[in-house]
Amino acid sequence: MHRTAKKVWLEGPQREGAPSWMFALSVLTRHEFRNRYRAQALGVVWSLLNPIVMMGILSLIFTRVFRSATPNFPIFMLIGLIMWQFVASAASAGTSTFVSHGELIKRTMFPRQLLPLAVMLSYGMNFAVESSVLFIFIPIFPAAFRLTPALLLIPVILAFLLILLAGISLMVSVLNVIYRDVAYLVNTALLILYWLTPIIYPVEIIPEPYQTALKCNPLTGILNGLRGCIMTGTMPSLLMWGSIVLPSLLVFAIGWAVFKHYEKMVLDYV
Image 1 (tube, one colour):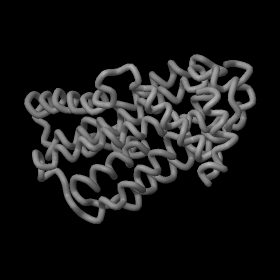
Image 2 (cartoon, one colour):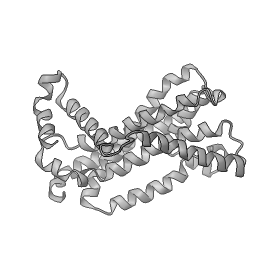
Image 3 (cartoon, one colour):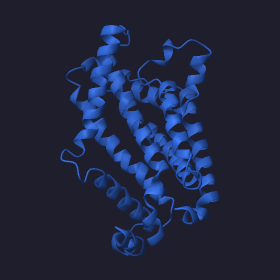
């Protein structure tokens, strides 16, 4: 892999007719995705089973025990679980990127920002595979899906999710090389964020002023936007777009600035 990555960086543009950084990013992303399941008999199937099992267990608890009044609650929860699995996996793996790929960093020549982005995008490939599970449930829960023009906005919403995660990955990956406590902080932050994001509950049941505070979480806007487009055919409001776009761009700008500030110190610590 070390020699391959170097060859990609030097010869990719001539062979592919694409910018060298883009070719290197695609190769690194595919490598991360394939390497994750290399020694597993079922491979990517595990990614499909996890959200389905969690949906089944939590749906049973919330519909039979707590009597949730949310319409089509299993699909409501499944969308949240699939998105959260992407967010948590990308943030956790992005944090340890440079620590776990120390030899690759030392022996190859390519822009270092490509590595955390490739790790994040490799989990985006998982996310795409896991999202296909929703098609299985269309005939089971037909009332939970709406075929409307709002579906065309899903790629736009997901683009801002990628921007948000890119900023987070860039920032935590470089900080964790210098300050190894960052990995523990990220895991703790993810635990807290899980409950501050309406994954297993609708934000409408939260009383004010806490509901407004939850809506400031960009993941809340992204998740509610996805659910609205898929389940009710509702397009995000201007306020929801603001809660998605502005924080995502801000986090990316901060992440990029932090990365560029500490980038030169990576080789001294890996």
